Image (cartoon, rainbow over the protein chains, first blue to last red):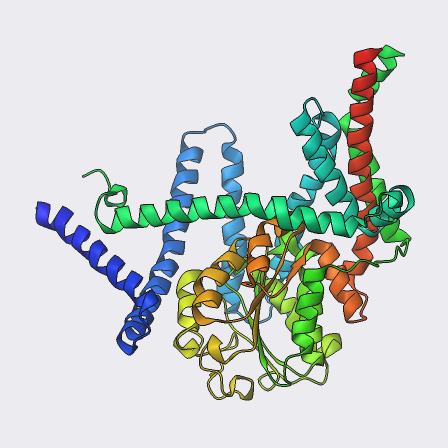
Length: 222
Length: 275
């Protein structure tokens, strides 16, 4: 039993991991064929992952409704929304239902999904502006540096800010775009590069741990 | 005086929301027409790269954004498609984001109407269907594109299309541009551009623009369009005023409001401290 539950999965993981890693660096017809095969499999598995995600979503909301958990009424909209999108699409067979060239899915996308997504994202702007007034307090030298950088970048990114800089701060001898260019290409890139290198090293270590069977969380508890 | 300032510091946030609403709506109703003089260097780099490409070169345009980021990214995509087709380049539109299909529909409907009415589908441009697994698709595009994109979004075989003539993988393409509100551009750099020495550029939201500085410095990205300002810059370069340019007035006022609010609240705080 331990052979099926532990050793074979670990061996498959090791073999696929080493072959895939090797194929990335070896430009060879066999490695390309191998990668093509794996790509097809990955795409198929990803398709099934969508289905699995849908089932998981439905199950979790079903439990919420059956337990009458707080806010369970909203869970009903998961099913209502799903049916409203899928049923007309299946019934129409992907053919236009509304007008000469509008499918039901296209209508829902354009007039429901687009509006809702846009609204949700736009609300962020209101909270950012409100928070800027209520929470951005310059109480330390570090906060002042953050403010100074934000002030220049926010101002310099738009024409009105650039005009204000030219009117009020042209005596400094620097164009706002020059200052932004320096900020973006020196301190920002330095910080970002450090983060990227850290993430990359973390990713490599985790991948090696999985390939060599040190990290086995993906196998479950058994 | 002190009480009045403290009261002002704790102003009802709905009044701030109202101020922002007015500042966003006013320039949409009556545009201010602020001059967009300082064009972004990275935007100009993409423009120049496309300008210098030989005619009928293939541009891979991966549109990976959904309606949430439409105001910033859709004008970028429209401007790039316009520029590429006007330059008589071949354009392949791809997506690895399920939410982007409607955005692509919009562009597909506009190409024969006002973007490039003289261009023919299948000869000058092609639209590929959504594919679910980005890393697998990108790896495959570096080997043989037809193993994944053997049919276009309408189910027509792509191998025989004139637009795909001479294209087997991204190594045969002239440029790739990924416009996205996610980390898709990072994946493109890692799995497609670097490995296949494929020139790649991007279009991203303003908030994620600073994160791509390292790629621009190393030349892993040939250029970058950032946010609505980037879209407005590109529209200026191709002399075509659209949503990017019209939105820049509202963006200007909103940015200035943020600065004014931060300054006001901190000045009040200082006055209260030393009063």
